[in-house]
Image 1 (cartoon, rainbow, N blue to C red):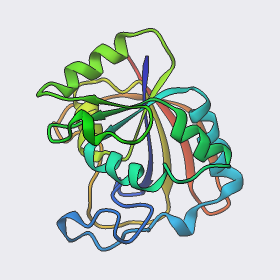
Image 2: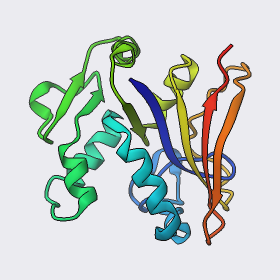
Image 3: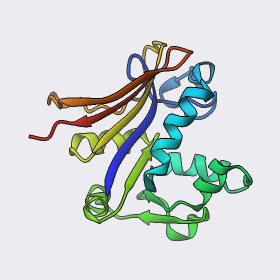
Length: 197
């Protein structure tokens, strides 16, 4: 499988709480919902549909999974809701148990070695394994060179602080720009892949 990191991102690299004011206030983050004014359905919709079409399963950390599991199971009737409720979902968590995973298709990557379990998933035949949000887990995947593709919606705003997904370990990680498009709202829709030695 191929790991795809997909995120709404501010120009200064913040991915925290793009969708709503109370989504994630860790660290006193007060800009929740910052992404909404920049959403251009005509450009962002096809960009997301394209990555979702190649996604065989979703990968979440506990917090993002809990947010999504609270929002989506009751929705149905539109293509995205039907897709997200049907697609397999892997959850990296040390605190959730199998009984907590009430959202259909959810599977626990429990234990103390989530990265090892994700490595095993990545080695399987299959399509995309897409991670949304889950900044802590996403950062670990970047640190372990497990991300095969970055699908970033870079938005024209500086947030001045918040959660990011890029590793801060001092290592350079060259990327190849595969595609870029610009939305009417100034969002850059970018696809990058690591340059493998």
